[in-house]
Image (spheres, rainbow, N blue to C red):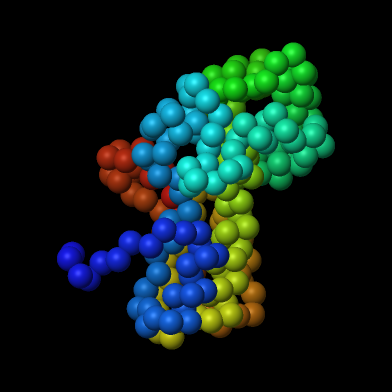
Length: 213
């Protein structure tokens, strides 16, 4: 793309307000998903099989999953598991983590997955630790806060005539976007219903199965 492309590194809340004020924008595509590269590299600490606990989308950030798992009080762990994992077992999982780390620090995704697995029985193919890992990741990266700030920036200074496409991957993200579109604002919904991946697309890319545009 030569001179037609410029890559800028930053959070939604850092970049979007500045771009909306300075640039003529014809379209915005915001993908709220985690990069497959981040998930597949075990050293990034997102995986159940990781030998560390990291989950930082920006490796330069100071706050990591290790800090959440080993530093949060039981009440704080219960809060993120209840709100972000939407699990009824939030107390039992938080208690199991606090009990395990009282003996020694929890240092890997493998350890954490095993602790959760001892509390929650496996049903089907999905690892029972999946929503709990998601909750920790959301907390580490303030993912929902970033989405709220992106939506606020669009509402305060909508780019004239631009098309905005938002890709969500779970109910918490869906809810934030739908609440914004249903409210009284200057952003008009183009599609009344979300667009979901086709069967063919899901066959080619399994990670697209929960995506909603």
